[in-house]
Length: 383
Image (cartoon, rainbow, N blue to C red; front, side, top):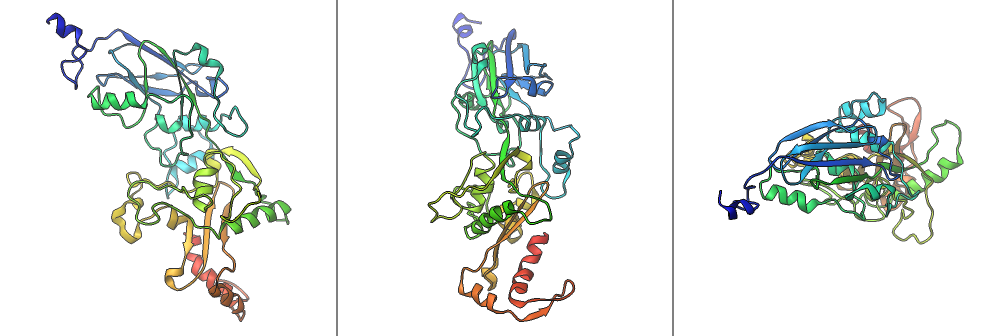
């Protein structure tokens, strides 16, 4: 090989000239407190610049080292499915509708806690002094399926996403749709954001509860807002809930991202916070994921039968001549159904339609106006 060819890193912009072995990369996963133990034992896959894979498990401190790999950056992935026995997670993985691709990494991140009580990212971590490269990552950075995961929160130390894209564009190994690029011959420390969520605290006791009275009054007020999914109908690949306040934003983004929210009406100026509890992300009040590649019922080809969060969580029969709106969501202990009260002339007429009629689903008589609203909602709630 001519001297000038040997000195060039590439024969072309698509392939390394002579990818050499003998390089190493070490990495460590830690929580926001600098502890690597929450991630100990997790299986990982590292892929080098020619596509060769190296597998292993993190040690008791969350550390691993890949030796004798080919030159250039490597890509780290932690996509192994959750293999534990905790019932909540097993049920989510195998449930009939919208089974969730929960990974071992997600489960571990859900057991960690934020350094700051408000969930705001930490600007410094005690382990930074041991790192050649320090980045803040989310579970979604390291796993294949992310539609069910929380939105990314702004970080002070961004992962090298540009390096990951460059590896794919220059043909260094296979194209990478997920993973974190690690710098070779250096020690990389990855701070994983905890996967915690906020949910309105509700008592499940049968007796009257002042807490529930307050909380459900706020949820009833929230039912007057829009669901505010974007796009509202016929989404192609993803949905978002940017409008605040809205039902979708509160449950799909704010509380899922550990952000306290008090605005439940767009005209509201005084702050009335729901009472929130800190829970593992999988125990939040859930808005179903949307991923046409993972769930056949989400595919746009379904036309009017396409399922997406708005038509699974929000009910509105105005197109059918009614004027009943409601939203529904759930966690592992509670199904929350909130039906809008009187807000239009149609609603007022329904209120006044107080003739007692037989209750077809059981015993006794019921208010005809409210019963017609119930009958409109029934199929939605049962589904």
